[in-house]
Image (cartoon, rainbow, N blue to C red; front, top):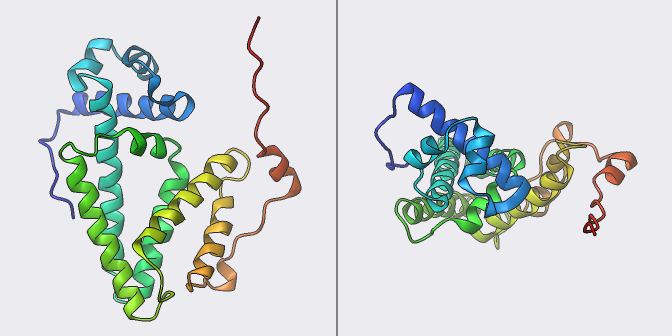
Length: 218
């Protein structure tokens, strides 16, 4: 597991920190990272001074959100590595990471704006890369996945699942699973027939279409 740990906060300080981070998640998902810290404080229901004590600027908050997410992905990779079968280990990670990504509408925003040269950001990024490389190499050596499957395919898989999940979360929150299954089959990792997810209905597809742009007010 990752060794990047901070001294635990008091219960009230940790509660405020979580309120701030969850508020930032919601606002980033809706508005991107142009949100001022004052708006995040209002969304969190805490004072602006409380936000600035924990996060001196927006970049510090984004990097904290990155660290939180990569801590989760590292935990998922560690759990996958406990699987004795290499194919099941890779499948476990792909499905667990996809499920996490499907719930996290702010992930792409956080990844795009994190300071990848800052500690512990770059260290966690490289550490996760080593875990994913190991899972892929062992599964490929065991013949449990296509022989041209690469670690880059893991990240592309999550990008594609994220795109489906972000579009369909309000109308068919589990739709991403069907397309994960299709991709996994293409990678040579078929799931049992009884684990397959049904397609969206025509109504759900229509409701997930893009909304027309809002005309500027005159």
